[in-house]
Length: 310
Length: 103
Image 1: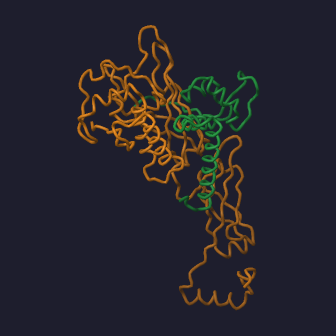
Image 2: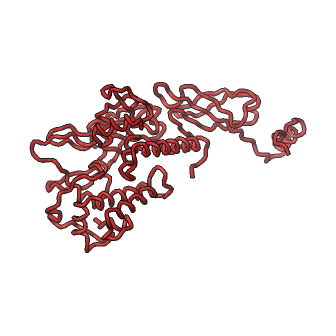
Image 3: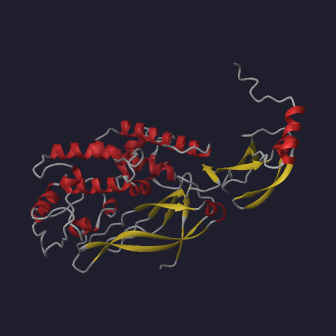
């Protein structure tokens, strides 16, 4: 396990005041806020910044960390000596146990002792949260997914380390991005016989080569020929739950949308599927093709720029 | 691997006040104060015993809690930031729908 230099992460000196630490944290929290940051590794950096702040903003944790870490530097191989934390009592400050579970092994080994497990104490386990990336096809059909999460596990000495935990989950059909699904009893274990917390998963979709999703509505591009658009045609179009025959009305334009009611993501009400027409022209790469284009050029009075002025 | 688990979709009125508070790792009183400050999109009935919440409410309140904690923001300012982030998300989805990347 590598030593983490929390002062370096926040960019403050070891004798920085609580106010200076708070100021440095806020600056970085703004820079790496996952919702708006353009930094490529914003989410990982924000987790690291939160972890450093959870330690340095807490008087007890900071004192214990300072006592332990004054001879170490970032990246150095590190094992906490036995009873290094004797005399300190760590309590949560700002970040819940479930949130701290997202921190590093280094943090878990140092500060991961679970409090409040004495006799007679009874408390429901904390809820855990995670994001899950699903394929659009799961939204249409439902399906099984194996989800691996890093969860804190306590050893016989009461120390906590992160371990992989795989859940085999049946996802109901009708999920869509931004929605939350709940796995009852899959959060942190309860204390003193109380029930475990729940696990909440925030749904996101893997980017799809062909489909774009907005709430329950699904959008796809449908390539058509100029004569299908001009004369109308019935064509076969792949859709997420199979394929459909769609009628292209005569006189359709590029960018025009065909709505297939209730063929979006299932639900109450189901979404719609929109096929956006994209007219593709054949290449003039044979004498016959050139001849056809020349016939059109001479016989069709068509100027797509006539309303542009100039 | 464990046995197969059923996942429950959280639609409207899926969470009680107590479940929402537990999901945000806060006390019930914290949620009551935020709901009464009207930081959620839907205005609930006056009696908290009749309140119910969606999965989206859970995500929004967790975001508001993190903003309040990280920046010592007031609930109203945190709600304003949450509004802007949600609007940003909507616009990114529309850009993607139009086949454009959000840079």
